[in-house]
Length: 432
Image (cartoon, rainbow, N blue to C red; front, side):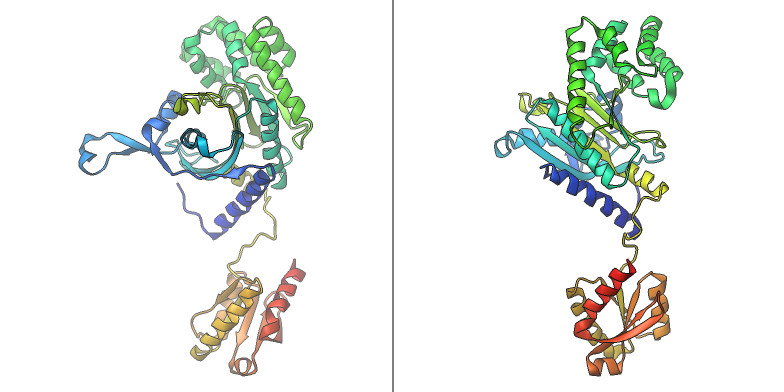
């Protein structure tokens, strides 16, 4: 968990602002949920490994001595969404499209781009089983990344029922499917040998391990997978669904970004259909992922509601953008556009009046509060990267004028205070 200094916050808000605008262009509505959920809401939704990473909150007050937990910090934004849909079903439309950008918490081991508190930028659609839902989600996250100037990302696509069919055909018992999926989900991180070792450690027989690796070893082939599951209705249906998603996505801005990858597993246990994950070349992990989870709302409601979602990981996006120097040079890195410098204590009131005028013109204004030497005030503004200093001496106050110093150009001009806002705005535009 980290502190964020002003420059960090500006970068985060820049990314969040773009993602939010893109999501809203696709008709998604905002939603927020509490940081804390009842622990029963979260347990059992993420698999055994996920359960171990939930931050539990011990009972308080007179129940503190029990050492039991009744609450927990939310692990993701999807399970809280499912709870909300079940709780407010009568108030929500049949087709509910929402986005949610909030922090989540996981008791994980920190690493590059991995933190215990981090933001997720989720977009979900509930109420339809159409593959158009997955295709549109892929288009929305593609648009967001492209507006952030990412060009080299790939959206890997697979299907949980296809994985189930492959596992069954390979000879993996149904009771071992969860263990096998956790291991296979690490193929891009630890390679075939690492996966084989992990499968063995999880009790998967050698014959089944060999069959699985033959299917999943790159270069992956849809024909190879189709031949492996031929005759299994569930597997064939899942493969057809993946193809439908990719065909529809080809009609959107995500065209050319989707790749079928039969090794993609995604560890969360609530996925029921198509699953997706976004990768870039120099990040050992993903920028985001998601999938269809048609049964999750039913755990709270008693009846299933079709649902599918995608989540972008803000922290990993920021890591890659920082390392690649992708933030726009025009992104504000200073606290103000102009600093007002009164010459003495008597000029502070005039400085406050001028600040209100300049702010009314849309400028960010900092009033230097102490009547220190003008040279010291200018030095402070320069150290903070503030481009303009407005000097208010006795003559300026008397004549209702202000002398504005351009620190970069080392020039200064005197304007009427009523004109100063427009003049500084124009000067900022010329600086670019």
